[in-house]
Length: 229
Length: 83
Image 1 (tube, helix red, strand yellow):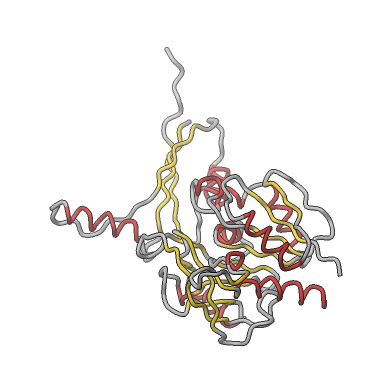
Image 2: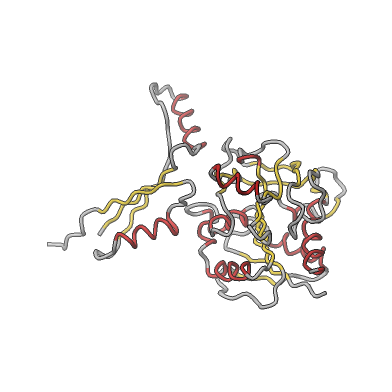
């Protein structure tokens, strides 16, 4: 049951280490670390993670430059073959900018950077990332972003809901997102983009304000679904 | 040739930045400001034979995010040779 994961680092990524640690803690194996300029991904990958941060200093638009970097062409090809791809925060922005997920993440409606642990409601429970959750389950995962205000036109939002492609909603509005969408899946369910940081919630720490472990389940779900498949 | 590309939020897309600036203008005592929307101006020097199709493609593929933004392209006079 070898499980091979990769974490991609762009110039300005800052959650890549946390992502790698989370994957290693949950899978027992360190992920391959890749750089944005790499044009190829190793063969046989099961899972690719795009971490949070401020790739290319958020030049032009958050995620815009990273979405056009050489490695994203390879990620798109792998995603087409069904490799699971998780984009967190800036990684989500990169996925929308590259067209792998619909919509766009705009500046938070109140203009403020939001940094706190928020309650989420799990909506989809059939994707590799969410299969271990119960429909409507409440989880708590930290957010930390300035551009997390999910926007798409009404037709796209209706389609996302109709096709069960909303993975998570904010239980309470926190950044102005349309229909409180916190995470979105691709049509085949193999790509998940989410603003909350599951890699920051993988173990119970001494202080209750620290993270929690709900994020760990996102990684556990991926392993379980992919290894079972 | 010099090209000036104006990227603007589509009508109806909420512009929190514009709204905050509007609020600040009110705070400074400027009256009569009814709306503020913020866009982006991109100036490029391109080869004189650059086609309109190429300029459009640049906007659609990178310079604007057409989910939320419109763009307009203004071609300025070709650079004159120094006399």
